[in-house]
Length: 250
Length: 260
Image (cartoon, rainbow over all chains, first blue to last red):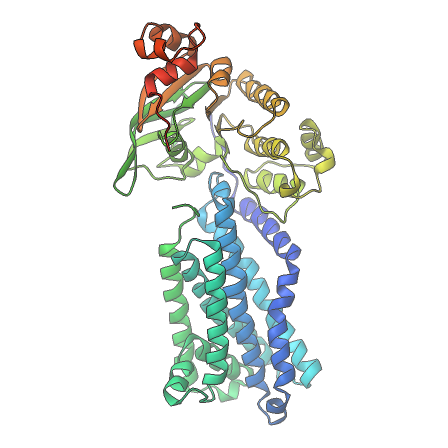
């Protein structure tokens, strides 16, 4: 008897439909992800008035990307793994990559929404507008930057199985990134920390986002930051995927 | 590569599963035939779930082969999985999705076209039409079990794997579940299940395999096993009612000690 296996597109569309529905039902978490960037937009109005609008926007997007990768993605993966949802999917004729591709597609949509949300917030709150090319390039860069934090989230769920520990770890890393990143870049913790922050995943993502909003300001350092951003994402995903276990039980 | 249809729907040969240095499943071999309910019985930690997990493709065996409906699991995992339906011991679905959405998800995954009418009929068949918009977590244990079984059989698989399907069910739900399992057998499909209920295994399974310490000790029909071990001193000692049952044979073979 010939066994028919469903086409990849059929499987992917079923998974995407379920994952987007799940995300929609969790739309409150999206609002929480947007809250911090919006607060920054409001509180940094002074910097915007001094002509540092792109920096404010890129900081907000970076913070949003960190929240998506760490708070959203990794916690959802840890919870579903612990509940055995992945194991149930894996006993069906579903390639493992399709399960993850569907999950990551939802996160890419979240990145798109957060970036657009920050642009809209910047426009209405701070009357910030950049060129159409700047918007398009920044959106593209946001996906590259988002990959770094999704990769970091993958590392966390790769190294830690317990969902509560994943939750507390992601909160700690999120808080550390924001505090050290935002204040460290201005030298609040000394020159050495400032240098580390500039070339850290926080700094490189922010740098390429800022430059992409004003393409004329793109320099050799920005290209270096782009290269490092891609490298961070590749390394994080390589470690995260290699160490990832589908089952929550050891 | 598709193998010609043989007389087995599932064939497990010389299966060995390790957890690190621990040898959990040792040279396990058995087969499940069309129109058969095969029960895998054993004390806690005997290797039942590990064997089942290897058949489901969740555990990679160190050695041995598993063939499902003519497809080697190691060579054609997607074909093998498409030929089987699985109900895991602790089934969980996305808590944000409704019962209808979960069934639609798995219908899509198995490539089954599910119209709205067919979905309603499916839910009606398991007396859950009114629960279509409820979240899975809002259902009772028996209702969850019914949904899980519907999902395991939505693509009409040749082999259905059930890991302790009656655990936690009330007598009515258990009776209904057995009727559904017997209906699968009547279609000529096969069922491989694990259970701790010897009474159920004796009443429903066509053949049982008793596994302990990772090894299959014996495989036969419940009646043949009772006949074979009737005079075994350990079995006679285990018998409390005068009449030898499958449970007495099981206790006689695997011992009285409680396993962790």
